[in-house]
Amino acid sequence: MQVANTAFWRGKRVFVTGHTGFKGSWLTLWLKQLGAEVTGYALSPSTTPNLFDLARIAQEDCRSNVADIREYPKLREVLGAATPGIVFHLAAQPLVRRSYADPRETYETNVMGTVNLLEAIRHTPSVRAAVVVTSDKCYKNREWIWGYRENESMGGHDPYSNSKGCAELVTAAMRDSFFGPNANTRPPVAIASARAGNVIGGGDWAEDRLIPDIIRAIAAGRPANIRNPDAIRPWQHVLEPLAGYLQLAERLHEQGNDFASGWNFGPSDDETRTVRWICDHMVQRWGAGAAWQQDGGSHPHEAHYLKLDSSKARMQLGWRPRLTLTECLDWLVDWYRAHATGQDMRATTLQQINTYSQTST
Image (cartoon, rainbow, N blue to C red; front, top):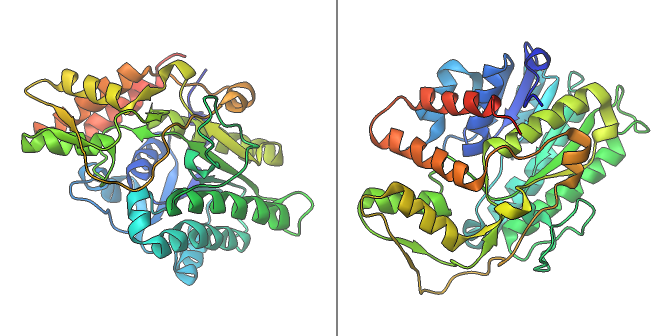
């Protein structure tokens, strides 16, 4: 099955919040490759280096607006001027440990930022479909050994996870109140939420994330300090959930509220691995003395086990993962090696997008 329909996306006007971030940069590049006209809205990149600058996205792929999702008047102005038909909402405070340090910023960005966007959409007649991206951590984690389905309870122990559960509740309430077929919005706007597992891939340098921590340690010639090597996460390459978001947006635009609900995009059950397994594979694949060690310090609470059930996306969207976890790790090692040797990272990233698009399931 085709990953994304080029004929659908060609010429579509698309608005992406968080386009300067890790996932947003990959999505913006892919949308441009598909022929979409992209307007971005986000803060400046939060790290140096970052994929947004390395891939020259502001210069070649979108109309980039550097602004805060918490600034409602500005957001409404930029969204209205862009006249998009489709919106992807990825702007967020995405880090668990940072949410402990600054819970107010986390809730303002992840909850009120979502409110601001949906309210701005309500006043932008051009919009027909929107995908609000949250997280697998939106679920109330009971440390089950089976995957969470879309109808499970929202929750979250830490401020980040809890804020994503709140964002899901906001999206559902706004959809039911203002955007559904029985609401006052005319024509209706089809709005869905998307929940993905731990996303990894080239171009991520965020603080307190496993892969960036390993890459920084390798660059510094020291072992990576790993907090919780026995934690189990649903690892997947960044292109996997992005493919799901694109397919979901197509259905929302073409078939409306039949697809306006929550959706999980996670890896296959047999691809769920511990942090230890990821670290071992990464250092072996990199070679050249790469190593890791367990960090014995005290750390804030993080879930030990979390897995998504993506049966709904498989059955109703025809979406499924295309890369094994080993392939995913090989791709990201290749990406960071290319960066370390001074290669053109725009070309490297686009090559991986094109290769993924041609990969059969």
